[in-house]
Image (cartoon, rainbow, N blue to C red; front, side, top):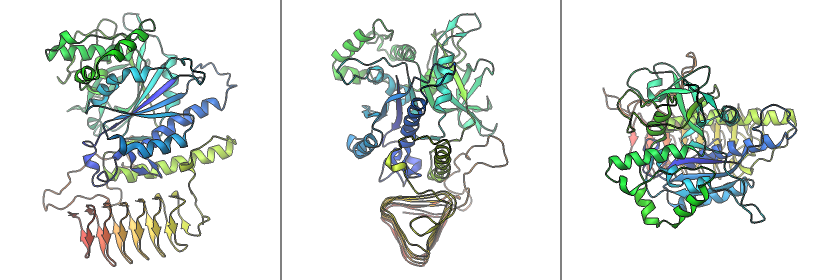
Length: 526
């Protein structure tokens, strides 16, 4: 049995995503018709459906029996902010158990995992009340990652390399398999860089955002972890506690099959206040991966940039692998990245629908996925170009032209003669007649009057198509140093913005609930 943990952060994160994250949590921002984190859930769901759809597979691989049974959202948003989404997701994916675990505060990408280690490793009960099977491994996925998730490939690598030969010919288990990709030499310093043995796929060295070039193989923020990884995290927790003068109150925890039940009972008996007090900020990248990188059986590398908080002579008990993929991958750090992700998610969905039709595979898909993707005149009467998503409740005039790469949200209204291209129109937004919207995001309940032009900068952060392995351009400074104007970006209308008729809005960001009576260019309207 597998589980998946999606790290969604909290309200103090996602500041670069404003003003879009002011009225909705960033993980719930809709891209290609689905909230960002639902694409992660959908990937986990499809993994199980694909593996179950071919039970007669006679390949030598024995990993086809594994599928994700539970998805845990881990963050520190208030419970009520995610309640509606959890209800909808549970109904859309009935075979998955989906829950939200709220951290007491920002604990980092590894601190939250360790805080909820008992829940993550707890077996799921069967319908007859008996205890279910144990967790063989669990995915950890950063919530701001957008990708064509190669979970199948990660599973195959992780379980087919459960014992490897180190430099000293000692067998070591695989504790974590990291989804990796390649980027350019210049862009690599903006990511976590890994030096990987090409023959064994072992991560030999890891540095998070180095100051100089280390490797063009970078961390994608998606991991497949063994339960034994918590042994390593427990050691890190103890060492950090000792360095803070609290070592007498802490102890390491070994999650072996013989004592895991006793440990769970002891942890449940601990007072809640004590466990919250023991919570500590730890990072999967700086603390865990750096510790495991270069593991050879007698020690592990701590990196060369002086940023590690782990002892150099610490003993590791396993290795980390890199599963390098050429699938599409990006991060959702800024609003401009949402347009880029929208384009690729629409294309991926179209490809999967065509594949299902060609292979005649009847996979149950959640209702939000059943959208209009057309290259000709759809049932609604309006015209489309390329991949377009329109929510069934949206109203689009027959004379409107949408696409390519357009998403129209629930309850939106598109009037006659409207042209929309490379944009996202959110819930209950209104686009007046004969208006043009390009490279923009129209916020919830925003209203664009008649004969308006709302346009952002085309490909302001898109990868250079002429450069191999290029990723999105790192974020430019918000303002130009010479004239103080807004640097090229997409145009964003915040929630409830009202743009009156015959207004031109170019390369601008409008905060919520503003009314624009004149034209703007390269400005932030407060």
